[in-house]
Every structure is written in C-alpha cells, then in structure tokens.
Length: 251
Length: 167
Image (cartoon, rainbow over all chains, first blue to last red; front, side, top):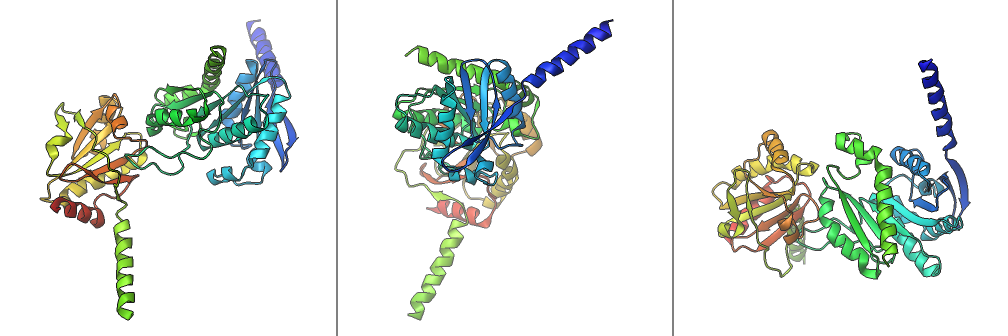
C-alpha cells in the first residue's frame, strides 16, 4: 500500500515537472532571428539573461526551471547561434546592441518588471543593452541587473594601478547587484568596479559568496561548496532581486 | 648608412630581449605603499627594513593556478640571485593560515609567506588580480611590475634584478 502511494507521488512529481518545460520562441530583431528559451511563470518578474548559448548552459537551465517554479519568468536568448558566432569570448563584441534592445523590448511587452542577468564577460552585454535602452526608451525603465562574477577589465590590470574597464561600464543608471566568489582575486576589485559602475548614477550593491571560485557553476572540478552553491543558484538570484527591489522601494 | 642600419638591428634585438623579461617599468610617481605583515611563523616583516635590497613583493593565492605553477621557479631564482641582496615577500590574498599551510606543505616555498587576512595591503597596493608582482629597488621605490605567471629563474629576469641591485 505504502509503495503504491510512493509510486503515485513520484508519477505526480514527474507530471508536475513536465508542466514547467520551456518553450522556445523565435524573436525577430533588426539583425537576426534569435531563439529564446522561455521558462514561463505567473509572477510579475521577468529575468532576461545574455547570451545563453543553447546546449552549454546546463546549470543555468536548471536554475531557470527552479526560478520559474517560484514565479519568476526566465528568458534565455541564444544570441551566439542567432548570429552564427563561435562560442568564444571574443564573439561578444560582435553581438549588436540593437538586437539586445529588440529582446528587451519584447520582454517589456509582457508588462512584467524586467531584470537583466549575465555572468563573467557576458555582463558587458547587459551594460551595453541597458545603456542604449535608457537612451531610446526614457519612459520604460528596466528594474535592475544582476551581474554574476563580472569580468569587465579592458585588459589585464597593471599591478599598482586602478584598472581600466570596458566602454560599457558606467554608462547606465540601472540599479545593479554584483555577485562575486570569495576565492577569486576579482573579489578585491569589487570596490573599484562598483565605483566605476556608479558613474552614471547606478546604485550598486554587492555580495561575496563564501568558498567558491570564479565560474564555479561551469567547472568540471567543482568542490563541495561550489556544488552546493550551484544547486542553490536560484536562491542566490532571488536574494539579489530582493535587494534590487528593496533599493527601489527606498527611493 | 650600413653602420646605422647595423646599429638599428642590434638595438631592435636588444629591445626584444628586454621585453622578454615581462617586467614593466613602473612609471607612476606615487610613493611605495606601506607593507607590514606577519609570516606563517608569526614574525613581522616591514618592507622598510629591507632597504638596500631588491625585493620582490608578490600578491598570490592558493586557488590561483599560475601562482602555484611559478613558485618552484621562485625557489630557483633565490639560488640564481646568489650573493645579490634580495628578498621575496609573498603576500597571501586574504586566506586563512590553515589553507596556506596546506599549500606550503605541498609546494614548499623557500621564502617568506606573509598573511593579509583583512585584505588591507591588497587595497593599499591596488592589486586586482593574482599573481601581481612588484619589484622594489634598493632605495625602496617600485621599479617594475609584472602581472601573471612567469618563470622567475629566467636569465633575463635574474640579470635585470641583479643590475637593479647595483644601481
């Protein structure tokens, strides 16, 4: 009898899980048609992530499912495939800002509060997109951005000198939340980066995640702490969104 | 004309050889930040006490791959520097003593490992990546910087530092 109940619960769980399956929508931008994986949710928050290369962002997809279960809709546009770009860091510069804006525009049409999110060097796309959006759409403000482990140096920092950052840094007024791992030298640059990001009026908050290295969620050699944090990534993002919401309500 | 061309070729190859050291001359007209930290044995090291020596101040961390890779070459460098007044102060970037001890037992650095758990000196020295290196001349001024892993026992680096010691 007990076994029957357990089996029934398991089947129900599988069924419930399948209702959260993503949908893929092709969005026409000025330069290309971009496939966007959408993890729909009923809440009033939409998280738009860049550039989300199809097939390689396994941890991100699990996180997106988890967020959608909690009512946060997630859009993951595959920018690199859309522009037929190789999945390498240098491709980021070839993603047109206009296309980022077309996707932001589609996201805002849902009527939800739109937050942007990216990690590593991809965070430059968020800043570039937000900056142009603010220039073109003065009445439709984005809600904020979460920059996870941002890598925004223009070039390798010279010891003893304040680093130079990429062009997009400090050009947006968007409220920003930074997440950085404790076990990466970049944690020591958080203050300097925050100051650079604030130049156009952004309010910037940051959080150091203990015992994790940079890109921990993509590592083959992840340690126990990193595995735990990866599995709790959705929670981290929700905390980040909470702080961004709170900073807005304090205005 | 041929003489001038010959001189140009020699100077060109000489400049390539100097660049091969990876050491960047430090041109900023800023004072050397203070550095006073304790090592793993609890002994306090003050950079001011090493005036008259060439000092390599390195900011590193156990989780930094290039730092781990280059440390054996720093041991060899000490031997190659011979009688030249020279000191290495390797500042760990904000880790615990337990973490550093595990690393030290494995890699066995033959130089002073200083602890900066609060990160104050990291901020003072404007360090944003690891490994970040500063070469301090005998007068106590920063003369070169270098970012990233390097073979410290290369002839180019050792000769540059020996030359610095005599100036």
